[in-house]
Image (spheres, rainbow, N blue to C red):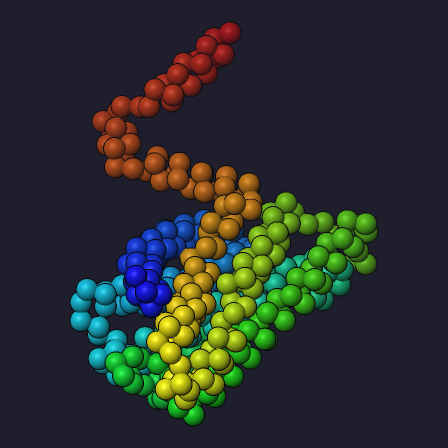
Length: 336
């Protein structure tokens, strides 16, 4: 089997089997993340609001990105044959991905503000500020991304950006997807780590005692890991976008093998890694934080207790064995 055939087969199998698996696990993880951070004890935390927003953006963006690609393998490719659907899909994916990126930046800013020694800066880490910031980011990128509804096009049976607009778009992606968010994330993460070290050595702030709760410290660790995962999954995306546009006029000079290799690398860097990034937040948190794992266990146990079978048993006066034993134990203690 030739190199071209092998790469095409591998890419097809990844699209057929790997991407649906990523989407299914990602949807489950994002829904669990929303359920956990939507609880009353979490909603007062500004970081929880940002994480809920990130999960919502990931859910919408990942489903619009992956489902049409998998469907097109064995069915009529709606996106590549409908200009309206092509532009709507591109607009939604781009808007959601940019909102996700810059909400992650806001999380870094929020955690930095929380552990700052100045009260005025710490005041930025509030739920009211978080709601406004998420709203502003959503509106801003919803408006900025309108250009895709106008100039995204279909050429040679593929939906994408082409011509002069494609070249401008590649540099726009490099700056606003790669350069700006990564620099901001790294900068605020470094300042966050410095502030944490400073707080350990100096607990007393200017206006009294400023201590971070275990939950806040845990969230800071989660965000730092999330930034690392984002950088790993995104670092190649801007450069490949520029390379693809710059060399788009040289296709006649490229061999079939070179085209296949470039297409496969594009698929990995501009599709697989990006989709993976949108669907790993929950699992990064599970691996990184013991507290988050306990939250997941408590949520699942709560759902099990509210299951139809348990509700039916309660309605018929049937109590769980552990509950009955617990009551007997309490009665014995009272008699004693």
